[in-house]
Amino acid sequence: MSATGEKLRAAALSMPGAYEDFPFGPETSVFKVKAPGGGDRPGKVFALSDLDGRPLCISYKCDPELAPALRAANPGITGGYHLNKRHWNTVDTSGVEERMVLEMMEDSYDLVVAGLPKKLQQALKWSAYVAKS
Image 1 (cartoon, rainbow, N blue to C red):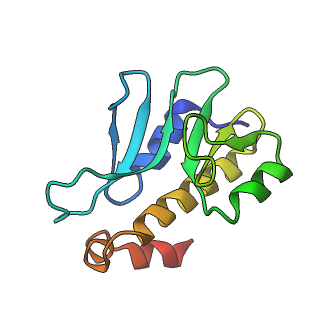
Image 2: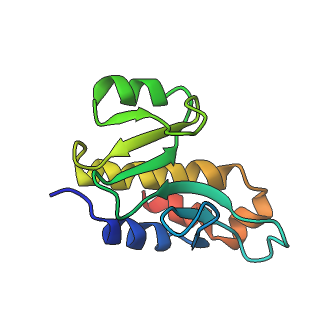
């Protein structure tokens, strides 16, 4: 069974500090993470998608060493659409197993949170989150 827009939204919003934003208009959901105490800075993006799009595609931040390997192994994964292709992949959820789609979301979130200052990682209780993965 492939992922749905509602499943993707629920999974993204279940991550500590995650919220949905619409900086590109009402059709594009942008999922960001912001730690409590993060000040006035906007959150950091870890996923974006037109959740009503057909086919349903979602873009994730990806380790630049891993991104090309994922693309080569699965035709449903391409370089990030309108994004830096070195750091972002776009996933066609109709061609990629739901489990992998959700794992890639977790990896994207972890990659973004790993780049936050330690104080903000602690505010998100991130080390406990990573340990369960």
